[in-house]
Length: 411
Image 1 (cartoon, rainbow, N blue to C red):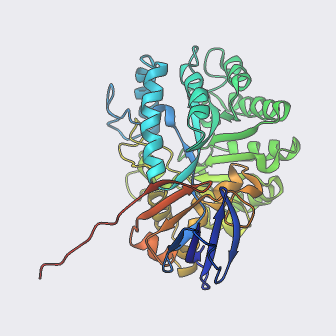
Image 2 (image 1 turned 120 degrees about the vertical axis):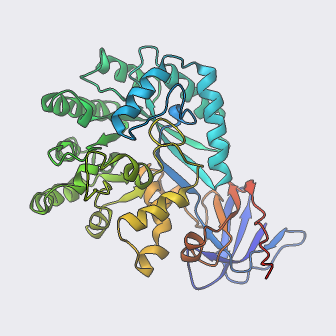
Image 3 (image 1 turned 45 degrees about the vertical axis):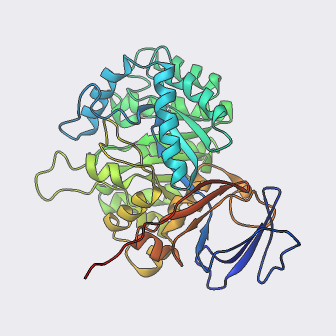
């Protein structure tokens, strides 16, 4: 198959893409089709690597209002709501909801998901189900699993052993939630334990870090220090880091040095954190999203995630990464032309670095032919106009396609 006249990642020069046996076999201008080879003229439409969901909770997806709604809109009431729903978890329940969520994501051009799965459950029901789904769905979606201690490692009975068991079962990354631990001492000890476990098992590490408006929540400095000391570096991700929004600038100036030395990744979740944070404020209200623009300016890797999909923490969501990028640009005031044009990287190539996908991700000769085609000439137009994902290909196989609606003005 040859895709003619593709605008690859905003390039001003259109190129042709040849796909053979599921691989990008040739990318150049004016390729000559072989006899009988399928030819698709894209007419300048945008081609980018597949979207990546770098932070979501698939085990909780599609449960909003069951058994109760989060009426305060706070992180902590969301945790209380989920604790009630968790009592009725079963493998079939988890699998049915996750399959629906994955179909939503696939329809929106997402082909990679990092999901956090709650392991503060003595039965580890959701973890067992998710590991089975990871294999079941591998032809349509790469799923990376973080063992996530929703109610804490030190603050939940047998929390350490549950984390170890989840990693032994096959989780891809160690998680932690230092800001939810009972004490500062527990917070530090939980991070020490998680970092040591990641180093021992050779697994990745992704921490829900300082997801609070409390400017005294300083888990990030401990996490970065451990990443540096254990040599984990970019195998570590700090998710949320909302408290950084409220840190004083003198502290951030010092912190930035450590963050650059540690080389850790960051994931911001603009949709959920603008919803959950600032709830204790009257006015002015904080936005609660970490310092994305400043981190990027320092050469630190940042990606965007949805975090939640119609669950106790977020009562909306449809599995599109465009929404996270669109709102993220607004709340971080990254609205310059180049910021907008290149923001696709926040949900593609930057996220690939976070997930440690390596050199096999991306549109280049020899790589798996996985990509999406947008109904736009560049990403600025695509995100500004909420353009459709015309089609999504995974290793040369078409997974999804969209026929854009025709709009008629009757005046």
